[in-house]
Length: 411
Ligand code: SAH
Image (cartoon, rainbow, N blue to C red; front, side, top):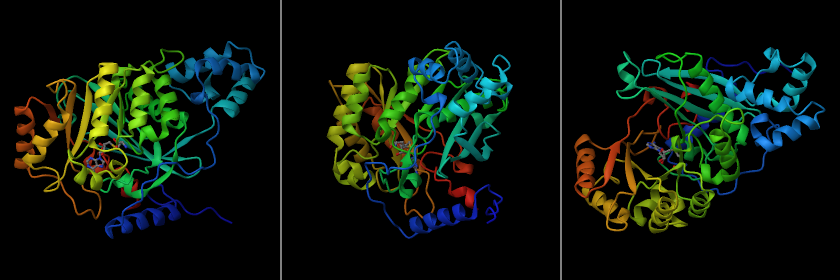
């Protein structure tokens, strides 16, 4: 049998069919059931990035190599962002082959990179070992001479996926409408970061060689539904070199639809990552519709757990709120939002991030009118709530919030 021909977009014909069927479903107004447990699939092969520092040495000696090789491998991986041992001249050839086979199997293959905003936004579609597709988006800000990169400090944020698909079924989100394929392993999460960091270090993004300052778990998936792997990946992100990527915990944001017991667990880990909670509505009636998980943990439960997160970590919590025209953008709802977020008489513990809705194909919803958005902002500000409107980077390449469903590549 011959291999199916790859298409222009890098997808196989069967993948094109699967994704256009998904688009048809969304156009027809299909909604997904909530899925809490990820389907069990063939596990990705073990990878160096799955190992905690203490496991790494044991794994190396288990292979019959001297323990000091572990630090060498970690330096290549975490300091030089190099996942290909063929050029590691400080290791004997035979050891390089062993290490490749045992610890560095290819996990992610880039199907197609897409860029916009003057080259400062780069979205990559990745294929995993079992054919699942995920996406990550690299956004560089404040690049002199590139207006589309925005003003301010030169910095780079990487938006990564934690699951292939998502089981949370939010009806305005393209990923949510595709359902959940499976959880990613820690290494599959971290390879996205290593690749993004390498792209920046190589100077492949306008603005010269740089590094990743912020990581946001805002790509595909519900990070707290894949708690174990996400937490392992965070530990490696923050571990100083040579055992990790040395990214400050404060630069990492975990965005959740509101899995209350897991928010509590995360607060108890004592890692000061930023928590973002996707609220999208201040009342249960509307939130039941926009975030079906609300039928399990409601607005009061979610805000209480966010408040507890703040008290334990002293990290200001972000509240994500996608503004949807005539659905959740009235000034009455802005007032109610300010009311439900008040704790200890004030709002200093929280910051509201308004996201202009990115319409998904066939969706009945669209972004708010400018004046409604402005009135919503003003209503919050008057009540002392700190609020910003999120920019819409990556829009032309379907790289903006909630658009990650790999559908654009089927065209
Ligand atoms: N599962 C996580 C991460 C989701 S993506 C969570 O729910 O937080 C990050 C943010 O983008 C979430 O707030 C999500 O609700 C929002 N989002 C999803 N689809 C969107 C869309 N079409 N327009 C604007 N924001 C969207």
